Image 1: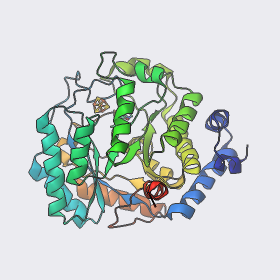
Image 2: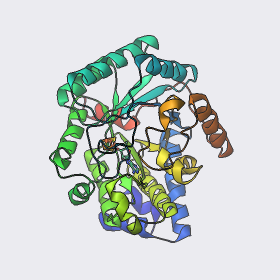
Image 3: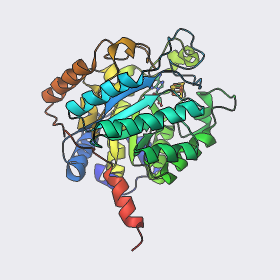
Image 4: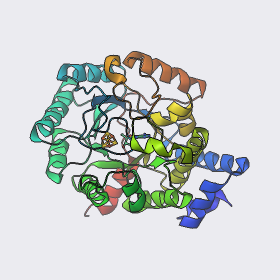
Length: 363
Ligand code: 5AD
Ligand code: SF4
């Protein structure tokens, strides 16, 4: 296998072979080629997005997620506007450049209005200095339009698994968790002009190397602007915890994630790829390892420490006792140790998104 071949639209078989290889030399070559491709296209610095976990209230019941609505052990919370604005002021003072507002999925006009209002307020408070990414689940096209109109310009909605059969295996069959609806929401995000991000979990029970190869081909075909992927991690209060005997060891899930990042970087050199917290849950340097394999975005947590333990989508989520200041200093220390530079005060938009726009702009 030659890494050079990966630069010319690799096919399913080829991707699956790279994902399956256990040869450490080949893997090292792959990660190094991805790091070089990133450096050439995007430079070597990472961009940050301060993460605010707005609320763990969720109407969905995904079989893998610790904050699924049926988990009665979780204490539900909703940050106040004042708590959110405190976090956004922190992001501005910390020179993060951007922030992400993430929450469980909610329906109803009160929630839609609240997000719209919050986005406007943040834009005002920070003089439009901070880029805003939203990650608040599947919503209607009209809602996406409203949130975009308020000033958010990037949106993350993971497809979770692009194989409809696998998607069905990890979600309840109750009409509320439809693969087609998720796909439609992603199309609506693009239509609403968002820089659109998606992603999958890696190492799910029953998932094959071909499934993962298809995930990569899906990202390319959908022409995504951003991707966030992470290893699937067990949560003991979820139905698929029962299948834990089938899982790869966590370290293998992490190395598979690193390969997915590297392959995607070679396939789509100018998109934003996040180094996710789930990687850090397996290895304290997981996010830094992702950056060295082609990722260019990190999302330090800014949620007030008092509620962090309630946003446990998987067991042993790191940093739940830290506050925003500590999350920042830990990250800076780790990145420093690995020789990774931070691009302060920049939005760090997806270059891919703007190139696409140029291509399709009328003359
Ligand atoms: N392990 C890893 N990632 C998870 N997510 C939810 N539950 C888990 C889990 N057990 C991810 C999903 C979701 C994102 C917010 O968190 O991909 O989109
Ligand atoms: Fe809700 Fe997202 Fe968890 Fe599903 S994965 S239960 S939508 S927070």
